[in-house]
Every structure is written in C-alpha cells, then in structure tokens.
Length: 120
Image (tube, rainbow, N blue to C red; front, side, top):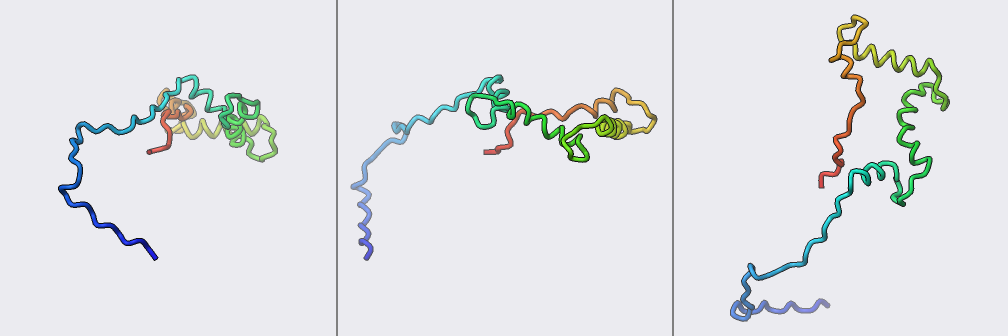
C-alpha cells in the first residue's frame, strides 16, 4: 500500500531566499581540440591515440571503391580514365570539349565545412 502523501508546508513555514544569492554547481568546461588533434582524430577512429595503417588507409578506400567499377580491388587504367573522362564531360557545360576556369572549378573536391553533423 502506498504511503500517504504529506501535506505541503504552509507558506509561512517555507524559508525565504534571494535567488540572486544562490549559486549552482560550476558547469564542466569542454576542452577545445587543437586543429592538429582534430586532424589526428579523423584517422584515429578508435581514439586510442595511435593511427594504424588500416586507419590511415581507410580514408582513401571510399574513393578507391568509386573508381573500381568492377569491384575486383584492382584499379585499371581504363577504370581511372573512364572516371576522369566522365568528370570532364560533366564539367564541360557548353560541350565544346574545353573547360573554362569556371567549368574547371566544378571539378574540385567538395570541402568539408569542418562542422560536425551534431546539432545538439
């Protein structure tokens, strides 16, 4: 059987306090990572402060897979050439077989904004 609820104290029994005098706990400080630490952690996936060969190469594997069209883990000249030719054709907006500086600029790798996807 639940305990009966106690009656709330009468207002004259409540202590008076000035909220301006109240102090709460100090919030923890978030440590800022240096630019070099952020770069390091892009490779150090398991955060053990050591970068293995696999961790270092893993950042390149997605690009390799995109070029390896037949998926045999071998990149042939033809696979590279077709990808490069397609990239050229996509950038050549006017179809004249030449890239203007503006067209060439569209072939640059997309840069990360450096911001995390977290919106918290």
